[in-house]
Amino acid sequence: MLGWFKSLNHEIDGVTGSESNPISISDPNSPLIFFKDNSEYVDPNPGHSIQAIYEQVFGRPWTSDNPNPPHEPTMNGFVQNAEGMEKGMAEAVMKGFVPDAVPVFKELALNFAVCDRWFASVPASTQPNRMFVHSATSHGLTSNDTMKLIEGFPQKTIFESLDESGFSFGIHYQYPPSTLFYRNLRQLKYLKNFHQFDLHFKKHCEEGKLPNYVVIEQRYFNLLLLPANDDHPSHDVSECQKFVKEVYEALRASPQWNEMFLVITYDEHGGFYDHVPTPTTGVPSPIDIVPNLIHGPSGPYPTSEFEHSSIPETVKKIFNLKEFLTKRDAWAGTFEGVLTRKNPRTDCPATIPEPVKTRRTEAKETEKLSDFQEELVQMAAVLKGDHKSDIYPHKLVENMTVAEAAKYVHDAFDKFCDEYLKEKGAEGNNESEIVELGKEVERPNRNSFISKLFSCLSCR
Image 1 (cartoon, rainbow, N blue to C red):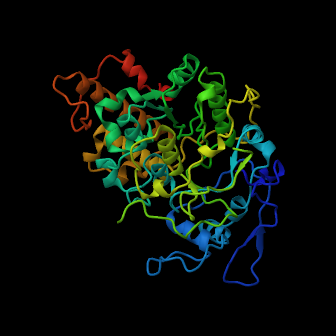
Image 2: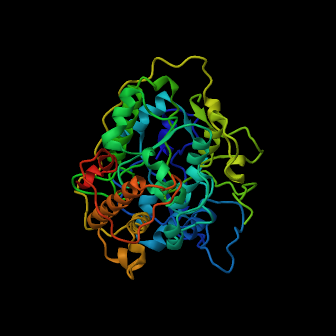
Image 3: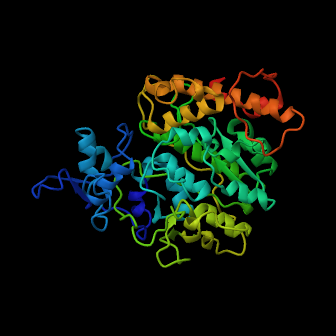
């Protein structure tokens, strides 16, 4: 996404166009595919499972007989892996966006810090990496595990660390929040921390009522009326640009602006080419089972890097929280060092440019689901109580379309929230009780404030 931003700042460790991958690594005469700057609308969805990433990074297919890395990363297996999935996909994975194609990121890069050594926490897909953002571990997850979805992931999160120390947090979502993968966030006491983005975010910004720590979740399902804005292929990149613009401008206009630290990151590379070798030395398992540019951290360990666990670790450091979540955030570099000024800047742009639409076709509501969308549906089934039916987990999502999935997760979240309200109103309930559905519940008045709080406008 930012590889060609070297043209804006020569110190960025970006691409030059000389980077290439062979179609076949084992063939010394194999044609090379060079990295180009003409990425626009990205349609294919390259492999980004742990097995696919192994081949992309080390240049040979992963096998269960010998899963250990054979050597230092070569970053020359992207084309071979893509071609193995679908003929012609190699061209798509070897393209990047010129700055003018993503004008929101261009403006932010010209005005704020860019990190050119930020790594995914685990060489795997979306959800395991998102878990490192919030808890510095995926609890051993490298792909979807439906049993863990049912129980809810048990590890402690940065949200609980903040709460224990008397600090506030908020999760602003546009679809039912994926942070409910965590079991502890299903507790009654955290109801107040979830806010529907379209209803509340700008209002909280205007009133100066944003909590100490805010997480914003995107729209994950691509619909005709409300397109996805998460940058996952085949979603229109300009929709994410609009989303980032909306968030930035709301924050910039807030009376809390001078107290803010905004971080924008992706969960993983999505199977697209990266020229920076993946670190393999001194990276601990979580458990025993700026100036204009930020190149890398200065510690706390010689091998420390910026990765998703840097977020909870930086939050811990800023708020002086009691303890690390895991060994990983204790190792990860922190980035509060970019705050070098004694006084806030007064020259930050109030608005940023309008994005350029890249997709010329309509959203495909009848598309099959991505792996992450399937996980969201399966999580929704747990929230709704459908995990006890015989179609859970695989038959539930087998033939489901994007439009059907969007409606299903919305309805499931509605039902979950209704049960939340019912249990919260019952006498003798512990605030730490986990909401679990296994029976039908009587629905409260949908016009209540709390129901609106949990409404998903996109499906109304």
